[in-house]
Length: 295
Ligand code: LMR
Image 1 (cartoon, rainbow, N blue to C red):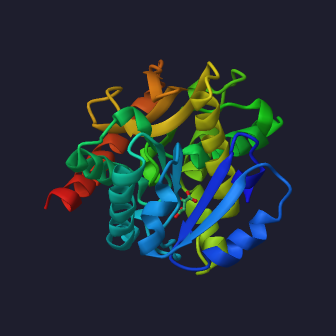
Image 2: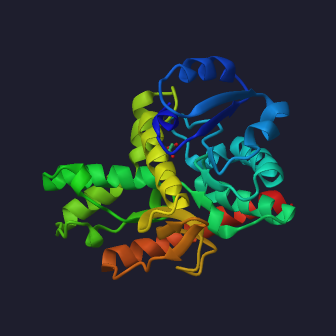
């Protein structure tokens, strides 16, 4: 629904294994410019993808209380693999936004699928970590007594627990925090997803704030595709910012996807120590994704 509202969308294809006819009919009555078409079931997947410039993958199962994102691996890994195989066939030049968890592993899975198909372009594959940035902006604004729209918190690393690393030393507008505030904010941002999973008590994970964040990120990709300069967002991508093969950090987006990696910038001692812990977990998650395709 949010993509149907976006004026940069001319054609919107909706794909799922259930319910797309109803959702498509419903959304198609909205008086916005995007033309909507629905595709149902795996035999319509390739048609759904044909000609697309941007593919958003939110597919898969959500967490229940007590689960980590990695607990979703066994189901969601196969779903992402199937979707990416079809992308490689039908829209290999599309920008791909991966939301399906565990993002720290599903992005490496997508990369391996594209490599196998001979279509891998690391610039065009982006893991969506925007919800971490959205949460960080919200929680930091609460502490500072500011409007969240005026706050910018870079969040680097990955999208699970301690791999989510908000750089509070680089918050804009420049702000200083007590140790207690840093610990509170880091913990809240790292566990924002779990906070929602617990509040929903078995009925799933974040869908509304996730949709908001996904569309904010997709809009940035579409603006960059259209040629807008200075589109900078955090995303989990094939990266050389650290020694890890995939890492979330600020990137500049252009017509071909990622066109520049912004440096991590000076980190506080707390952030440096947290980064080392994050890197260990990230390395394991990346290996797990790669092994899933290579085995
Ligand atoms: C989130 O951050 O809300 C999503 O990744 C969903 C989840 O399982 O936490």
